[in-house]
Length: 96
Image 1: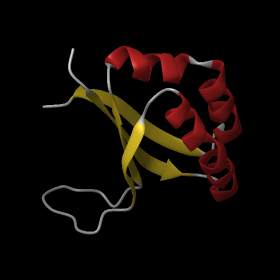
Image 2: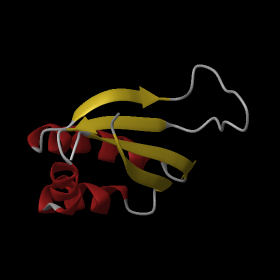
Image 3: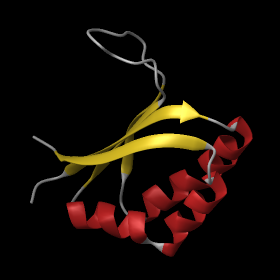
């Protein structure tokens, strides 16, 4: 399989402190499993039905790497820190 892109859209941020704590520790887990950030933050422009949501985009060499990262104890600990601090949509799509 080709590279994959991980996309996370923050539909709702409920607790900024939990999100900040998560954001301090989660990037290291991405790097540990071979992911590389392409973009992080809020849109600089919106078109069509675009939503002004925090978005994070990561590229992975293989889908298996992304799945191993997500399922790892390291990342699961990050999710525990985030807890109910945000409602997110995460997906992995094939890189063209």
